[in-house]
Length: 335
Image (cartoon, rainbow, N blue to C red; front, side):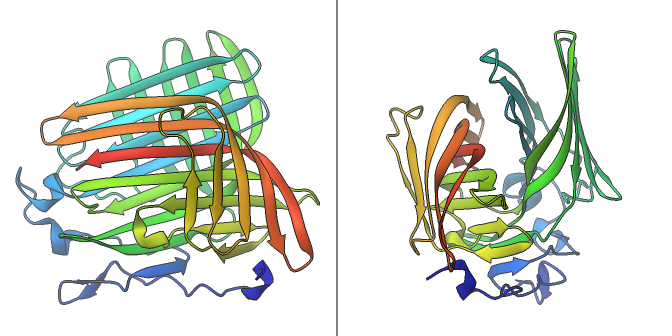
């Protein structure tokens, strides 16, 4: 099997709405493009403290940007009863990691409707996160004394939508874009740097199971003949629906992902490959971001190593070498 097994446009177009009528969600599966109508009103209830909107619905925007010198991770999340956000910047040249995070009870209003078209904003003391849609993408910023970050993500190429079952809850849904052009401006301790980067966007909205575990990988790089690639992989979650690869202008489905690593030594190399044999990479962590949150009914144990990868991609023209930057993740949550 090779990627040319899948013709261009082999993924069906995304449904127009999450709600398919009569209280039903759109069909589970993997699609090209995004869902225009993301309303969850049919499942959320009145919005009170014990409504599904507050107790079960989760939404977030994650942005990652990679250059040969910098690794940037950024997220803002509405977890119903609380909001959270983080940002980190790793400087490969100096080996320094700058990180900020916040947890804010009821940080998003009852009527907040998570969407890539929404304005996401969270403030906590001097820390300020903002992610704003623009005509051609997203403007993403963070500022606090000692760190200022501005990223402009350009919407380029097809995105991938996945909808999956969620035991005991309505559904879970995500929309991913990889290998995006990014303009990055950093100011760390008064030192300003402007970089052209590539990056990834993860928008997620749904009702994940009460107890959720996953491994995730988001990779961005090049083939040995100069083609841009982006990879999104997940295991133990979403039934593998969100496994996909962006190769040049094509969005291609991938099979189940297998993550092989030592949970007790997360900064040792990881092997990540797909069951169809198309992708096989070794991920070499250079650092990590960890967080352990426990607030009332909610808990999250999260580790995201960041670093480099290299490996192989099987195509009809033969096996290509690939390499680049990205993140992997180990996550356990009680939602």
